[in-house]
Length: 550
Image (cartoon, rainbow, N blue to C red):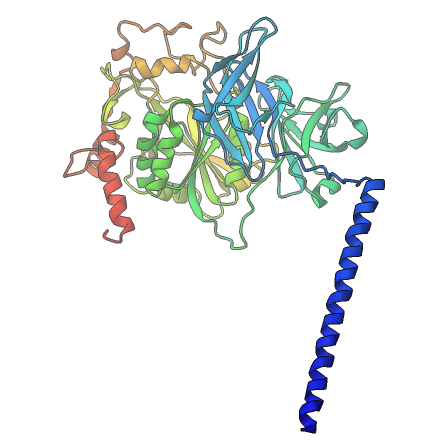
């Protein structure tokens, strides 16, 4: 009984304690509300508004006006995808009229988060920009500098020997001649109008359109993706520049390079021929291709993608710069150096014809045996004519063109990229080498190049548009008319002679045609693998290969 009364007292004290806490808390909350209401009536609230970051924008970094089009460089935020050709428009503006719109020629993704839009040339008095077709919230910020093509520092690379290689238009140096390097300086910075924030370095060599200079220690220690490099000639202003130095691939620790033989070419609007050229040269030993695209507008990127899907190792590179083939080949040699033992330089209408019926690499091994210090193998060229044709041969150039001139023309070279002179001097057909390396000529009986130079008029007339080499005069100009680069007896006007289909035919030559017929014609379809009609069969085989059937 006593225990029961004691338990009752404990419960009532607990209840009383809990009740007291509730009362006290309620009083505090009530008092706080009254105080807050009174305080706010005498002292208005102070509101802190933090400035939100601006929304990300696509910006136009700069523009370059070429002779026939304008390049617009876009920088994309990290979170943005690159727009397609159908999503952008070129906008032309002038003070006297409303803006007008035009489709871009082409778009190219060139670096991470960077895109180049190629717009048609604006009429005099108009400026050109770009805009997004949709009315979304994304806008393109027009804060950029505009450059003429000449003069301009247009490309640059950091080399493995702590130097910078700078590609310049407008130096007007003589071909194959060294200039005095002390006349030049390399200049690094973010804004070349602010001398206090610039780094300068000495030039080691200067030749043609290429400057090599020491890379400042500050730049080597902290390479900046946005820093530019330019050139200053003694007593003159700094050259305008869009060049942000890129990194050259380095060779891996193993002494053997991944590829024994690669090919580099520069082309414009050769999409219809690229498949035949790649597939054929793969058969005779070429393992990798570097395609430098000089402003094509014929869907060549899709043709290259088709070949890549089929297993061919092809690297596409936009080389938009006008009449800079020598500089482009030097740039290619540097990029290929880490992965290619040997690198050939030929055009898409040129085909190695190995007459001794062995792999092209066997010819290289034969001429570059240890102890000979051979670093360049020169192969003679023979030019083929239209061979009586008026239409593009459906089976390809090797099957269609079988008649050529009797005399050999210039040579083309296969080089060892490691052996090139540091000046990188070349005249398209050959390079200057570092001693003790030498060049050798291939005998006609071992290998030649079939150059399908004078094709049907529909194809040939495109050569009048512009020559790509720096020191070769365009055919429409009344200069250097007797050059071997030109077509004999044709003149400077792209007018088809009545006898064009039968010109340049002195020797019937079917040696390569017969070999191609034997090694490439499909027995079931009677097609060649580069013909358009063969594509469905190729894709079918690729699908089977992916499933492990083949």
